[in-house]
Length: 295
Length: 264
Image 1 (cartoon, chains in turn yellow, red):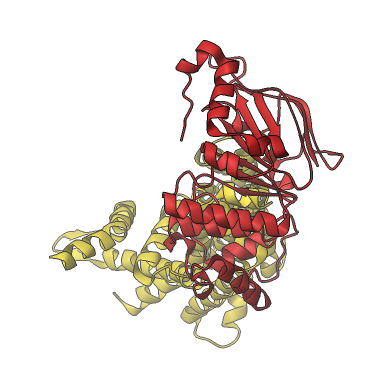
Image 2: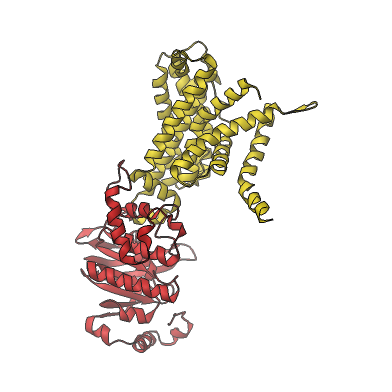
């Protein structure tokens, strides 16, 4: 792997790590498999790109993107809690709907941001080398968000959210409205995913309605790889494990894409196959390790 | 204190599986009452407790608490005045969280939950003092995940959590049925201790007739969604298991043989 592709993988790891943290909140904390993310990632990108091309400050555009993601998550959560639609199906319905919504927001399938001022520009202005600006910017933002999530999960409301995913009957009997907690959690999760999408769009210089395909798989891979490698005994450990898991996942992908056996090499279209194998390996690793040590 | 007025609850209403769980059921629970509830499977015992807790709303009838009509209150709202212990020891606590986190959650029952830190250091001392009363050594394991505890330990913790904020009404749904006899007795002693000390109004469902006679100041026998027997104070003290069985016989006649009454 070249230094260039290494830095590129770290950069992607951190920016998509924000999305992975969102997936962690729904998948692990709330036990709510949420596929909305495939739609809310391009939603964040679209809102941010449209805002920036209309002259809005790029940081403010992140706020708008997170608001849009929050609303998208709220739709899924309300479909599930109030209208009693199965969580998986509710999230698929929102995801599909968002495809049309995103095209409406952009006014087409994609929107270029070339030449526009972005969040990364404000980091490169500080004097760091251009190719380090994006990974450093994303690392700083991702770590700040991770700390914020860790703090939240230690608050009274955060504890109620952890309990809602683990034992809804118990937490209801202790006076918590689980519908409210699910709506709050899924909305916040999608707000994070939208911010991640907005930053990706600002970094690659374009928003595209198809950029969300496979988001949930990458998010789950990051969560599972991170937890397997770095552990999840405490909330603090688990949250940083998810963020670093995302970096590890992007590095593994970059590594795989760099492999060459004679005439054979992987192409980007093999990414989904590689991801699946990676997740299966991470899921079965503890079991295999146990078997080997038993021998 | 809590009054049920012609409370009726159907399950699967309108389908061929329609069951009437409670029929025009009325009950007046007085402050400080400790009522034991017995009855065969399907008599409506759990439906009664779940109905009071608000797990579902009635098809007709009314529930009032201290003259407030709470018939349409959702479960989480009623939780402000109700403490519950379930039959399944895994249900009353959160296995993925630590002992202190579980207690911190219980300490906020019926109160506003905000963005201040959940387990405050000033509360730890209080939690430890409470746990010491259980005499299970849990006071030194505040950071341990509840999932590591045994069923008996979890049930003891649930009982403690249910009474951490004094409930107006304590609902115990066969809370010792899933435990071994020795642990069950320990939990029962603990239950008695907490109820007497705090003078809690309690409804306790049990399958054990001896238990039902031994505990409380009032006994209710349910059958097919109706009250079959309701004895209080001195009259209850004179009751024996044989009395209970014969009274059940007398009211049921020939139907008894087909009923799945559990006798211990």
